[in-house]
Image 1 (cartoon, one colour):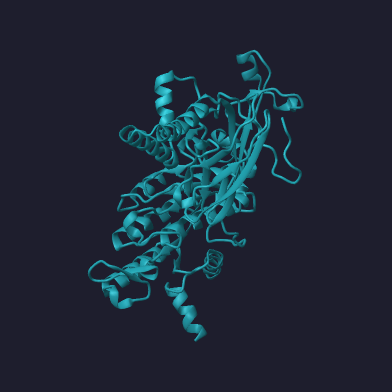
Image 2 (image 1 turned 60 degrees about the vertical axis):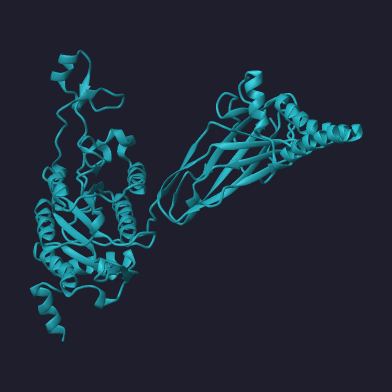
Length: 494
């Protein structure tokens, strides 16, 4: 196999002819009549024009009795058919492969797609035209022209894709287009291989702060103090070389007939639940700068930040769906389904989940409250859309199930508003929104603060790191500015 040119991308492994490969032009052997009719359908506009001109010249030669004109007409009509036959009988065995670098990118970032075409036949190819299918949101469809590829040789090309919207986007199949030297016939064949580009939400680096009611993953806290006492797992494990013989569990050894030891004490990991409100009617607008996309990106940033600090993180939506699921608990060392539950693995799982999260049809957050009924004490960080008083009361009850609670409330009036006819208007047009709607979120915020939530209101253009520090300042003062203690402190400073 030929090596790539110095300084180029690392070589792509050639795919076997049966996987992602294609015979050019045909693939598998076909029946003669049906395959040739298919090849005739590949005549280009030039080829069809030659056939039509040849037939017209032959008819005129017959009517006018001009044998010389008949020869010209036959030449014009036969030339495209000869090109079809030659192209149809030419058999190139070509294998194609694709590599994404990287296969997972944040929104508004670029990824590079490397394509490789290998000629696995014993004869050189002619002119090859490549076209890869990509969704419109990733950019224009890339097209390449490859010169003659020697037997056993290969060609490599690459292109860039970029998406401002998160999601999973299919790439492929790769299409190979063959043409004859005269441009009379053009045949297109597709490879079978597909790939998927995952565009995850953007993650912002957050400053280390200490929130109300939180306990560091392995730091000093009441929860960790209890964990230091430890307790042996009720299920012993098999003896491993180097285990302390003082930990041998003799009762299990006698039961199973092999040496069994008690498991080591497991330190307690502080837990954090990230609650994401996905209700469709709670957010107005769409696109990368919408309130909902801000909430998704913020949830990804907080989840990653808490995992880096040693927390066991769970993502919960208003529908009651959690990642990891009930069988995985909060992840961490007790989640074998997530590759051992390392912070890196958990971050990838959460980012992949947030890459495809969409609006729900729910109207309340009662399902999230039910999902937290069995949850142990821990920190909850919620990203909420518009709330009325009834929904705020439901969110206030969630505070009873947690050790600490921080809510980022996105008031749609600050992002996009509606006039009396329901038409979307730019944010900041206060006359477009009735006064009752303008005060609805404010009353909900006061209810949450009275229930013990640390509430941070989010407006369009706010940066998450600054809001994260603001939540820390609220914790330091122990009360928000709208609570009685906060108002007393504000009055003292004036």
